[in-house]
Image (tube, rainbow, N blue to C red):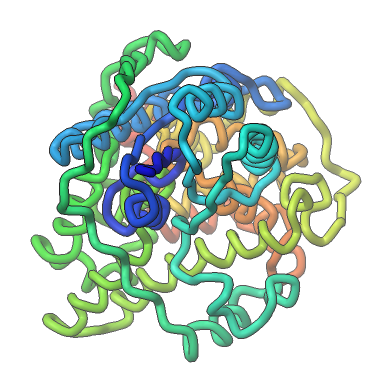
Length: 441
């Protein structure tokens, strides 16, 4: 019997190092790749009323899906596009095609897990199974020197325990063989437009640090550019706190967040670079940042829904936090009256991106100066960031708000000091606040 398998692409929009895809190709004769534009993600809102997926990330995902479809077509396959609730439309497809399994990379946070668990139970009713794989991290849980529930709560301790003794596995190769033809006719479906998903067409802001384009092809190009073509990686540690331009940091986060590139691939490309051109603190620092992504993912696994709750993983709520819609609007609109904060928030509003330094400052300002409930800021970031990653976003907000994994008590960013240090000549502020760049006559 020639078995069929559905591969449900989620936040792993690539062919290289895709465990779910490789597993399906080993176990089934016919493989049906699928992407679902889920109504709850693309048409729903957060609890504070922000679009669940804003226009910048929506556009990036549309581009990524189109690139994945093109890559699959080169291998005599296609990407089936479905729209609706994943647990319903995937079940209908599985029933219609009489597949044996649905393969996907497992997600651990509540909203995503609820969908996959519901789908799994529905599949059991027709004698089919879910097969879960891994695709978001450097490290496999099974390789850790401790069980998940004993993961250190402080990053430095986690790093020291992991990096010394746990190797990063080799990334899986990109498939080169063509797919077997399907024995059934399936309509591939049209990729929705930005307008179909509730957003107006927009042109990239010319002031943006980088014009991010979604897809595995573009993500691999960016790795090649930042490491090999320009050697920018050799100065990454010194430049990473920059705020203007496209090259002060790797800018890999949008492609990592949607799984267009694999963290294991980036790591091994980094090791190859170090072997050929030399290692230094900067090359290590890129690995260091990848390790932070894993750490927040493990915190999400360890603490579950606590990362989304007001008290965070510590369960500590600051009684000063309020929910003031007017203050929040001033913050999101870049109209707080604090130039360094407003410049960063205007960059985010107009591009969907902001430097890591900027994110730390605006998050601190919201929770420590405006005394707003940090969850409001986290949800706004969830909506608007082009590189939103659930565990990294909520883990970082826990950290800055003082309810998460931070060894320092009462961490606070002095905005004036930060502005003088990271934007000493005011170039960044003037870039985003035009009224400050033009002398008054």
